[in-house]
Image (cartoon, rainbow, N blue to C red; front, side, top):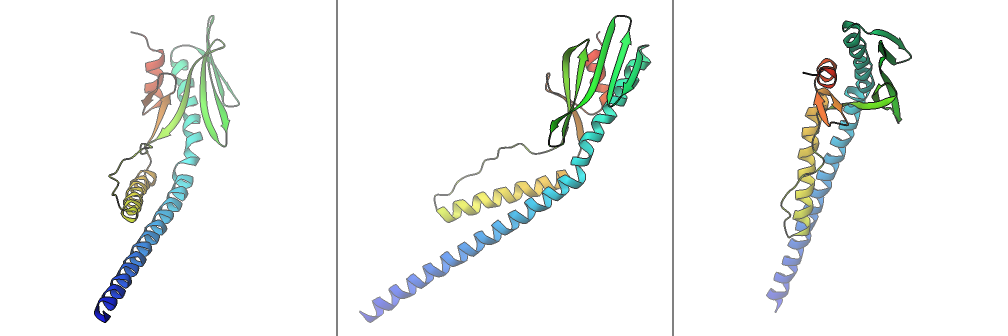
Length: 187
């Protein structure tokens, strides 16, 4: 009887130790994930956010040059470009969505024909992983997958690649010039 009691007590101690180890491992994973998320927020603020508006201002310069080269009379004022040729009028203006989110609206006469945003290379918002039946293992799998995702995000944020997005057509372009050619040059 004594041996059975000790065996049961040892087994309970092992289970408690294993649960403690797993809990500690999950806490370490959570800590690593939080550190990566914090680092990525800092990288975004340093390497991405300041350039989103700047790229759109560059796009306005491309817009101005594009129409000037085609014989339009071009006027710029307060982050707005007007291009006139006889009765034809195109304009592009930098507008703010709020919270420092900017876009350029392109109009023909007064009708909006396109909205341009700047995006950067990033990960898709969804990811999948196999969920183990054990609760602790499932949490470890989830945290491990999120850590991998944040590590990939770190690589993107360290050297972001920006592109222009035609929101109405949902097409991306590496330069403002290529976007304008696609939008206005007809075969």
